[in-house]
Amino acid sequence: MTINIILLGPPGAGKGTQARRLVEERGLVQLSTGDMLRAARSSGTEMGQRVAEVMDRGQLVTDEIVIGLIREQLAKGGNGFIFDGFPRTLAQADALGDLLADTGMSLDAVIEMQVDDEALVRRITGRFTCGNCGEVYHDETKPTAQAGVCDVCGSTDLKRRADDNEDSLKTRLLEYYKKTSPLIGYYYAKDKLAQVDGLAPMDQVGADIAGALEA
Ligand code: ADP
Ligand code: AMP
Image (cartoon, rainbow, N blue to C red; front, side, top):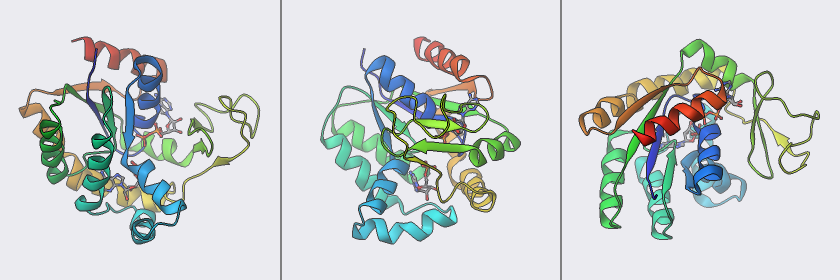
């Protein structure tokens, strides 16, 4: 079954972790605007350079840039998308609705991952990822089996994000509450919203998302 879903939640809620599971289990395509922007930065494109400082401060980049990135990806087609970290503003949400309609697609569900702010600090300060395959780890809740080696692909290129520090997280949280949290009401009113407890263990969150998608 083809579905298009949004994973909505503050930084560190577990969106990327669950998106990767959904890719594996359902063959959906993960569209993470954060990953796209980081890729633009590391390949040194003009846009990547322009957004670098904004990202490091923890602020949102312009709607125009991220909507453009999503438009490009949707134009390539695919069999069901997981929007991870997009939309983050009401303007982005409206634009996504239009883009999906233009390509004959619709939005099936928005999963809000609920996590309290204290847990987010621990999530963000313990996060590291594999630079090769993108697997997401955590110092305490999901360490690698062998120190310094990715469980999935064996790479030793394990990285921490420049913006994963307490200072930047404060700004990112403020941005979330000011600009992104209104999307909860927006999608509730559109009858798309489902909520899961993002504080549960990863497998349980995965099962709860599956349950919400069945419903
Ligand atoms: P987001 O994409 O929402 O920013 P991530 O998926 O990168 O969040 O998760 C943030 C951190 O929390 C990562 O280090 C990840 O391993 C860890 N994590 C994700 N889900 C859980 C969970 N259910 N329980 C404990 N730790 C988790
Ligand atoms: P993320 O990987 O989702 O945590 O995003 C990392 C950073 O990229 C954010 O703090 C923003 O600076 C930027 N970013 C990612 N997605 C968006 C978006 N949809 N709108 C605006 N900025 C974004």
